[in-house]
Length: 80
Image (cartoon, rainbow, N blue to C red):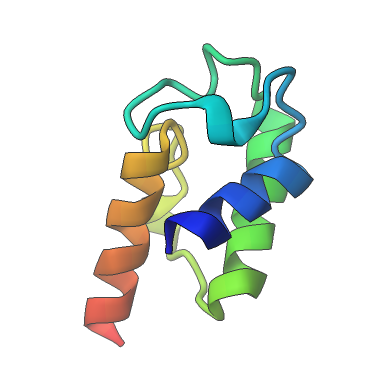
């Protein structure tokens, strides 16, 4: 799962550093991801994992780190 998340971040995150150089808990926004890029990341994750993030998950916190993204995706997979 982490490889797919990293691939989406590399493609859509517009980070000034390589996504694979970040730790699981590193703040993606502090690393340079913008709010606009986070929307692209969300859409990329939806495509890559064939999920749809519900409105309650459309928060800055859900997309703030690799760990929080994985937790959200795990929750969606469990609910499916």
